[in-house]
Amino acid sequence: MTEVTKPQAKPARPFFSSGPCAKPPGWEASKLASESLGRSHRAKIGKTRLGLAIDLMREVLNVPETHRIGIVPGSDTGAFEMAMWTMLGARPVTTLAWESFGEGWVTDAAKQLKLDPAILRADYGSLPDLSAVDWSNDVLFTWNGTTSGVRVPNGDWIAEDREGLSFCDATSAVFAYDMPWNRLDITTFSWQKVLGGEGGHGVIILGPRAVERLESHTPAWPLPKVFRLVSKGKLSEGIFKGETINTPSMLAVEDVIFALEWAKSVGGLEGLKARSNANAAALAKIVADRDWLGHLAPEEATRSTTSVCLTVEGADADFIKKMAGALEKEDAAYDVAGYRDAPAGLRIWCGATVDTADIEALGPWLDWAYATAKAAA
Image (spheres, one colour):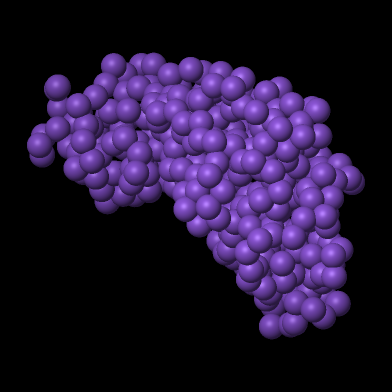
């Protein structure tokens, strides 16, 4: 390969990490409201701000009033574990896995909860056969496989007349796709993904059938305090009004309120989707123009528009490390190496908080980093 000159123009915001993700454009810590800081989250001001965060999430995501939204501990992992530990065991279970985080839920269902689940797997870059899902079972799946760049195409495969519950890990999907709330019984995510919020807090959204399960099913195993959504056989409604199970970071809450208000300013969900789609299209053009770059997810209909995973011709993990290191040293792109358990490659976040101009500016720098890594090989 001929030598590539180091580009002059850099992405203005070289933040391409798939979590925590880039802050919204214009974000500054000084812009966050601070009146709730140093106050009890149980005081009126704390509950009001937590309630506002819930209301804004409902508004931006178009979550129907039939569904409850709660802020819970432990990021998306904590939220999904909470759902599994409180609601599984009433019916047989099917788990879907096509990347690292889906495999984590398989492990928990099979080895921790010992539920002997049916497991539908696919290799990185592909989806399992969604038509093979038995909806008499409870079904666990990730909407958007963050470490493989593969997503479900839509919610049509989720049976409307399902007997089991649908458990959706949507942490890289919400705020980027239309979510079919009538087909999602439990949905979880975390603020540090598509919103660029701070870590440590999860969100759980419960449809009516999930509430019914919580109030009618007692798990066979003990539940830690941070997982308990029911008191005396009834849903703890306060959790879904900002009365969190344990102490939240009010700074993280103020940060997500900023992000949600920014989301409204760019057109709400439709504006966020448009920004993410434009970023993914700009990256797809970069890939199409280079014979040494490819998509780990070959099918466009099931390719993520947020966590876009790329293959690099002839690259192993060490080669990718050199590429990512060179880009970071030049402040041209941060955190673009693929996930540690995934095939060696690059992963570029294209969610709405990234500006399309920064994706476009990334192309020449990928050329330079590829040439640099090859020269060092």
